[in-house]
Image (cartoon, rainbow, N blue to C red; front, top):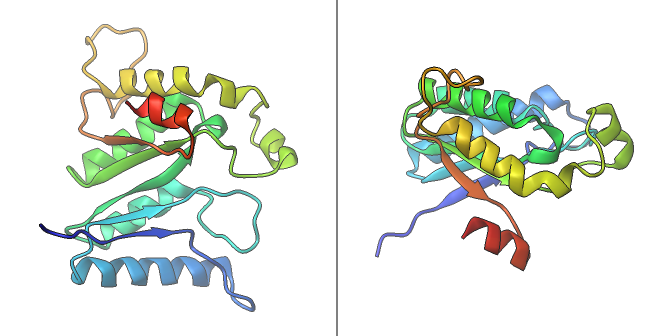
Length: 177
C-alpha cells in the first residue's frame, strides 16, 4: 500500500514577521514538499486574523501551483458562506485550466471569521443554511453545461476540479455521500 503525505497550511504569521514573510514561507514549504513527493498541499481560508495570511485562498493556491510540478494543490477549504457559488466555480475553473489535473476544491460551511468580519464580507448569517444548495450550484457550474445555458462558469464548465466536502458532523458526511 502506498502512503500519501499531504499538508494543510494556514500561512501562519510568526510574531515579529509580516504576512508577506508568511506567504514566502508558504511558497518555500510547498516547493520543498513537492520535491519530497508530497501528494497534496491545501490552504485554509480565514479572515481578519493577524496570525494567518491565507485569506485570499484562491490567489495563494495559484502561486503554490505555479511553483510546484507534481502535487495536487487546493483549498481546505473555501468557506462557502463567504462566497458566491459562481465566483468560486470561476476561480477554481481558472486554476484547473492553468494547472490541469492538480486542483482540489474543499468546501466548508463555517464562516472562518467573526460576525463583524462576515458582515464586512457582505455575507449574511443564514448563508451557512444554504450550504447544501450552494454546493449543488457549484457542482452544476463545474459540470457539463449546454452552450446556451443562461449562466456559465467560464472557465469552469466541464472542468475536472476535484470537489471535497469538509465537515466534522453527520450532516457533512451525509452531504458528501
